[in-house]
Amino acid sequence: MGPSPVSSGPMKIAIIFGTRPEIIKLSPVIRELQRKKVDFFIIHSNQHYSPKMDEIFLKELKLPGAKYNLNVGSGLHGEMTAKILSGTEKVLLQEKPNIVIVQGDTNTVLAGALAASKLEIEVAHIEAGLRSYDRTMPEETNRILADHMSSFLFAPTRTQSDILLGEGIDPKKIFVVGNTIVDAVMENLKIAETKSKYFHYQKEKYFLLTMHRPSNVDSKDRLLALLNSLTAVSKTFGYPIYYPIHPRTKKQLELFKLNLNPKYIKVTEPVGYLEMLIMEKYSQVIFTDSGGLQEEACILQVPCITLRDNTERPETITVGANLLATPQNLLSQTKIMLSKPKNWPNPFGDGTASQQIFSVLTPHEPYSEST
Image (tube, rainbow, N blue to C red; front, side, top):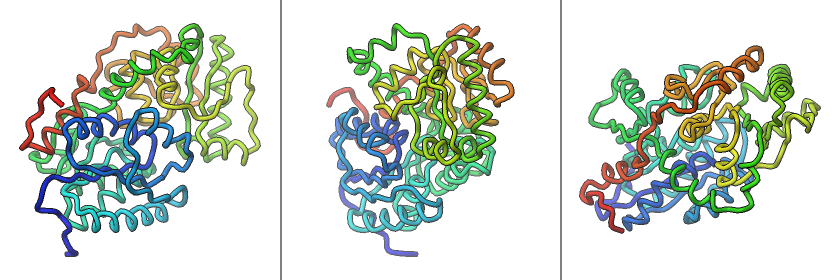
């Protein structure tokens, strides 16, 4: 076994992220650590390499900057993971934290958890236990491996806890705390709704689209079929589709020489988190292949249609907030979601996930409302 940099002194936590969803979902945890004056630092892998996709979120959410930026950028999965692993290991050896916190299912999560595990540093995995059971998704491999390397597994619901127990993970390591996305939505929606520059969304009728997964955008036939179906939805219901485009999809559209009709699909550059929250809240339906947006739509009581054959957020379907769709049945699924009452329960907790996580990681400092 290699050297163990775990400090025997006061609590010190490393937070590792590299993408926009990680920043958003970790923001309540970071704020909680700040409020409780816990010693922590941030490693940013820069897996998302566009400032509009990550740095703007740190600024908007008034979060501290990263102490370490690995500047990994895009690349093949193995290459990216190796770079993050190597860079993170060097930082952990230097800083000697007690705990490393990772969130979700990205290459950053896998590399961060692996670096910590090899150095005998305890790993806390936020959003543990999610499974799509689709091994063609790189995220599935990342989340499974991260779970089995972690000492603290923070499951959003009992469903994920049961999955982890079924995989033989020690029940003493599993904590059902809800999802930090609820904390983030509740905290940041209040801020977003005070911004007058977003008021126009409340007066419009529109759909919202996010789409970036390789399974949807790396095949010309699949991408074209989805775009044709989305255009048909817009024509049928008379609402434009706003599409803050992901850099990956933009690149693929250019590669395939595909043009979108702006009358139906209105492409914009990526937007900040606060604006995105407002766009989500006032959308008629959200079309997405993102896990995080399935959750946010459910919390915001906005109908969601997931452009995938499976989801690791089955709770959203169970409560009636979400449906899966293919290009062939997208129109009929949209009709169903538009006709549904928006009164489903929120399965992801009461907005105290970050407080519960704090209490588990720092049991010597019981949670209180005081700062």
